[in-house]
Length: 266
DNA sequence: CGTTATAGCTACTTGTGTAA
DNA sequence: TTACACAAGTAGCTATAACG
Image 1 (cartoon, chains in turn brown, cyan, orange):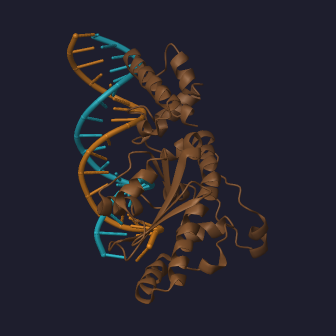
Image 2: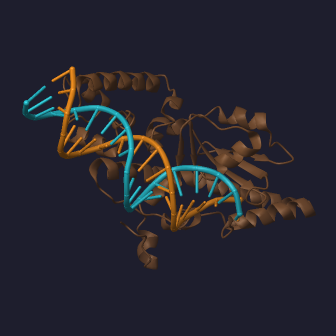
Image 3: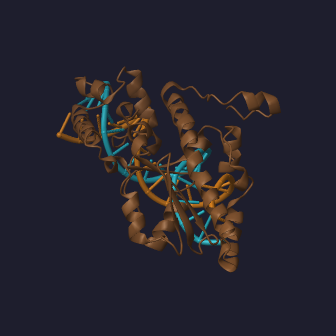
C-alpha cells in the first residue's frame, strides 16, 4: 500500500497521484524505473526518484518516523500493524486530569492507573516499543491531553480512525460505529459512555470500592481492543476507495438483515 | 466545557509546457 | 532565455464533529 503511494512526495496530492497511477506507474519501483514521466520536468523527476529511494531505505530499516508527517497516515497500516499500539485515555472531566491510559498491541493490554502506575517515564518507555499509534479521535483528544500533562508527544505515525470512518461514511462516534460492524462489548460495561467513566473514577475515589475501578479499566480495554477489528475492516476499504474508486465495505450481513437497520453504504 | 482534523470556500503561489 | 496561460498545491478562513 505505502509502496504504491506517491503522496509521500512534496507537492503531490491525491490528484497528481491518480494521474501517475493512470500512466501505469503503480509503485515506487515503476516510477523510478521510468525514464520520463509525463507532466514532470527531468529535474523534478530526479528529485522525486531521490526522495523515493530515501523512503525505500527508511522502510527497509523499519523507520516509521520518516513517514509521520505525510498525509493519509492510514496507508502505513499494513506495513506497521504488527508493531502498532492502540491507545485510549480516560480523564476526570474534559481537561481536568488523566485517570487511566490503556495501551494494547491488539491482543494484550497494559493499563496505567493514576495512583498506581501512571507515570511519565513508564508511559514513554512503553510507547517507545511501538512504531505506529492507532486511536479514535486521538488527534483531537488523547494525544493533546497526554502532551499537556506529560509534555510528551510521540514522533511515530498516528492513524486516527475517526477520520477514516468519516471518509467511508461512518459517523456518530465509536460506540455507534461498533454497532454497525457488529462488534460487541462485554456485558459489564455495555452501554457505558465516556461520561460514565468520569463517574466511575469519582466513585472509586470516594468509596474505595474496587468494583468501580475494575469497571473503568474494563471500559477502557473495550475501547482499545475494538479498534483493531475496526482497523482491519476500514483500511482495506479505504485503499479500495482511493486506489480503485470503489466505495464499498463488507459488513456483517446476519445482524444487518435481522434488524432491518442496515448501515449506510455511500 | 477545549482541542484538532476535515470539508468547503477563496486567494495566492508554484511548476509545466508552448512559443517567441 | 523570457513571457504567458493553465493546472494544481498551499494558506487562510469558517463550520462541524468527536473525545471524557
